[in-house]
Structures are given as structure tokens and as C-alpha cells.
Image 1: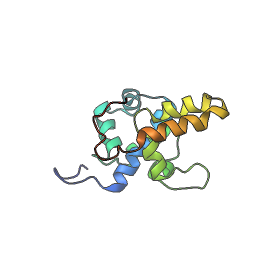
Image 2 (image 1 turned 45 degrees about the horizontal axis):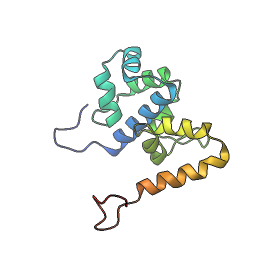
Image 3 (image 1 turned 90 degrees about the vertical axis):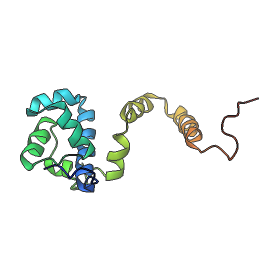
Length: 136
């Protein structure tokens, strides 16, 4: 069942979608491959992953089976060992996040803090009035 036009997606639907996206990406599957394996279009997978459309129980079971993931994990139940937090699912669902994490894991341990510091510096907001200025 789809939400009414103009209404915000239910936070539970968004959370389930983020977990589907994370599990799909972890398995290295494209939206097209997942869609074909469960018998729907990749556009429908996109809608599920955004939380725009709700996933029926039977479809959630098919998706979980394809992704070799417990349904409870996709729904957000935390069993203490495999459960993912909403924040982690959202962060890892960002485009490029898993690639970045895999590259980070391949770095020598002594190099990792420098990379984290560099990325943190990029994420800091510009001081007032400094936008558009070039370095001397």
C-alpha cells in the first residue's frame, strides 16, 4: 500500500527500506538483480528502499531469502549479534559509504587516523565570510 500523495513516508517504512538497501549492497547485488530474483521491477525496489512504498510481509520474506538475511533484521529487530541500528543502516546506505569503508579496511592501521582527520576536516563548515575565497 502506497502512502497518499504529498504525505511523508512512515519512519518504519524508511527504516525497513534502508535495511534492504544495506543488505543488498553488502551482498553486491544491483537493484535490478534483486528485483528479478523476487519478481518485481527495479523501480519497485527503489521505492521500497526510499520508504515511498511499503513492503508486504510476503515480499519482505522473498527479499530476505534472496539476501540471505533474517526477516527480523530487515524489520529492525535487534538480536544483539547481527542487528543493525537505524543510524548505521542510514550511514552505510549513503552512496559510496560501503566502498569507502572497504578501502579504509585495506589501509595499514597507522594510516587510518590521518584519513579520518582529513575527511573530518572536509566535513567542517566554512567560517563565516570564507566561502568562495581561494587559498593564498
